[in-house]
Image (cartoon, rainbow, N blue to C red; front, side):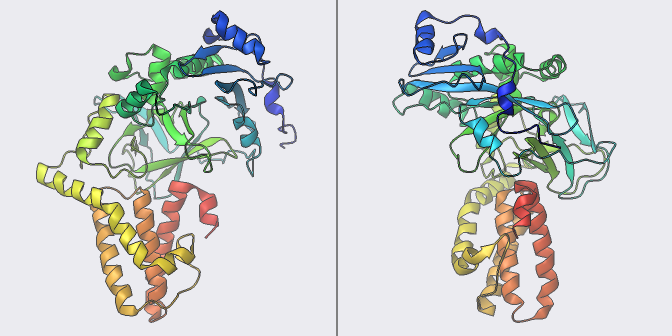
Length: 439
C-alpha cells in the first residue's frame, strides 16, 4: 500500500511561486547565490541572521557551511498515506523532513472513525462565535476527531540573549508566539500559497482576533488560530505551530474536556475526550496547554492576547474561591513532587502507570499517603484540572500505592485495577496509544 511513499518522495514537490518570493535585496541575493542556494529562494533579514526558504528539490541541497549566520528553511508537503486527498504543507528547517521520514511507523494510515462524525461546528450564540459541539454522548478516552493540519510552520528562530528586542517580544507575547515576526511574515504567506484553492478558502474563514490586527490578515489568522507544540520529544526547544480546518474552531476554557496529540507516523491530529461529554455540549481545549497551573490573573493576562475573557465556571467563581483555587494550583507541583519523593523506589521502578512489582512499603505509611493523594485528586477534580499531566501523575501514584496494599489484602485488587484503567485512559488522551501499549 505504501511502497510509493518511500524515502525521497518529498523531493517530488512541484515548485511554486508565492507572494513571499517577489522581491529580495541585492545583499540577500548575493548571500543565496554564494552559498549554493536556488536563485529564486526568498531570503529575509531578521537582524542578526538571514533566513532562506525554498521549495525542496533533491538535486539542490543548500549548503550553510560557509555562513554560520544563515538559517535554512525548506517548504515541502506531507501527503496522506490513504486514498483520502489530504496534504499538510510544512515549512521547517532543513533536517526536519528527514526526521519525519525516519520516524518509526511512518507513514501510517488514518484511523477510520464512525459516521456520522461525533461533532459538528455551529455558532455558540455568544461572543465565542463558532465552536465544536458533540453530537452524541462521549466517554473519557473516546476519539472524536482525526485531522490533517492545513499547514505547519517551524517557529524556532534562535535568538541570542543580547538581542534586546527579541527578549522583550518573548516577555510580552510568551513562548508560544514566534519571537521573530519577520520570519513569520515570510513563512505564513508562503505556506498559504501552497494550499489548494479549497484549503485557502477554509483558512480564510478562520477568525482574526482584534489583538492581531497589527498583522496582515494571513499572519493574523495564523497567530489567532495556530496551536503550538513540540513535534519531537528529543527537540524540546523546537516549537512548531499548525492551523487546522476543524481543530482551530475549538474554543478555550480553563476547564478543558479534551486534549489533542500530534501523531507523526500518520502526521495527523488526534482529539480525544478527557472526561465525559454529554450530547450537545461544547468541546473545549485549554490554550494554556495540558499543565496549566497558573493563577486567575496570569491566565487572564495570557488570554487578553487573543481578545478572550474566559467565562468558565472556575474563572466565574467569587473572589474567595478564586483565591483558594489559585493557592491550590500554585502549590500542586510541589505537593505532588513531595509524595513522589516519598515513594521514590516505587515510582522510579514503575513502567507506565504502575510498578513492575511491590517493594514492601509499610502498610500504615501507604494508607497515610493514599489519604493524602486522594485529597489532592478530589481537589484537582474540584478545580477542573482532570485533563492534565498533574492528574496523570496523581493517578500513577494511586496505582503504585494500591499495588503495595495488595500485598497485605487482596480486597485492594479491584480498586487497583480501576485506578489503572483510569490512568491508562488519561495517558491515551494526553500521550497517545503507543504510550499506553508500553504498560
